[in-house]
Image 1 (cartoon, rainbow, N blue to C red):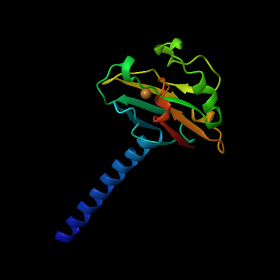
Image 2: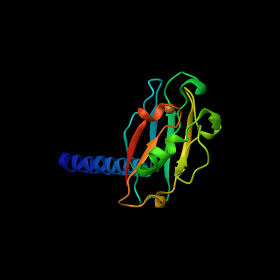
Image 3: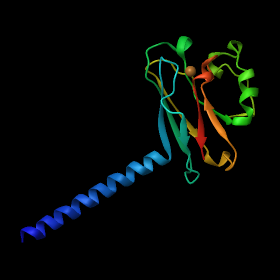
Image 4: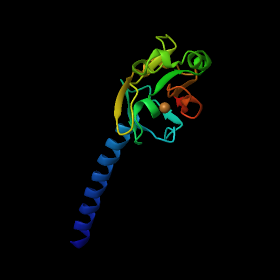
Length: 154
Ligand SMILES: [Cu+2]
């Protein structure tokens, strides 16, 4: 009898673990949280985008304290081949609300620029990324891309 209950209990624990694991995996696959800091860094240098997701949601959080005009961060997605072209256009004159960049076809997705303590959400359409091509993400605050960049794993 005792063994019987132990067996049921084990089964319940397994089911609960499976359900939790499933929701965790699902949440991870179609979105993620990226942190930017006062040290001019993202907390990840690689983002895996699952093409099976209808949309992929990037939640950018600024874990620092510095204001947006001193240490603002955004997240911009582009093809690796276009990096030089895009960063050559980064200029203060384009304004913080545009991420200091002009309108360009090469910029696939761009989040709002945020300061310490703020967060923003960016929705990506995974279909935009073509398997076999290389993509990267950067922060377009002038000078930040040198340290704030990473690659996409499609
Ligand atoms: Cu930045």
